[in-house]
Length: 187
Image (cartoon, rainbow, N blue to C red; front, top):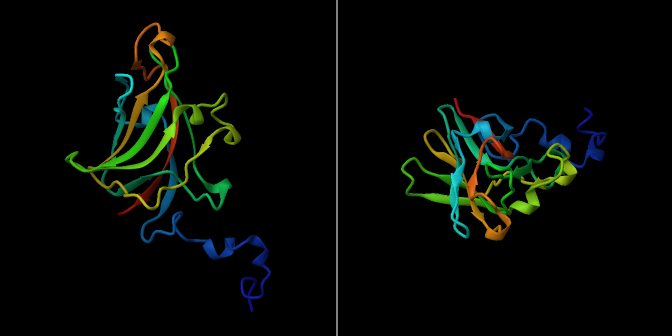
């Protein structure tokens, strides 16, 4: 009778049952958390029209991998992804609104929103303090982006014009993001 058989591991709340399984319970391929920052996207930044969702970041998935927004599971908070985003214009003025994390196929004709997040819920004073960040578990009920498909971030600015002295152009140099994804090896 081994350790797993005689109940000695029972106090781990089922952790022993999950060892060796992919992070989402999804079959096939190794998976791991991959946080995306400004420089991890193929493109980042945009001039916004207040009140309209517009693309601000795009990542094309390379061969041999698949990606899905979020990481881990809410059932295990210590093992889920946490997000952070501070979106600023060239003058360093912060823009507030709603982020939409979505999947898009290679032609751009099919899209699916994985989750939407109020930017004030994901902007924290300390981007490295998980207690201040927004949990973003893997969106297992949403599509994986595979080769030549895209992970896309859209943003709808709601900051009143009176609070902005420059413009609604998001500057990659002045912004900071950390958005969790799950990456799968397919090859």
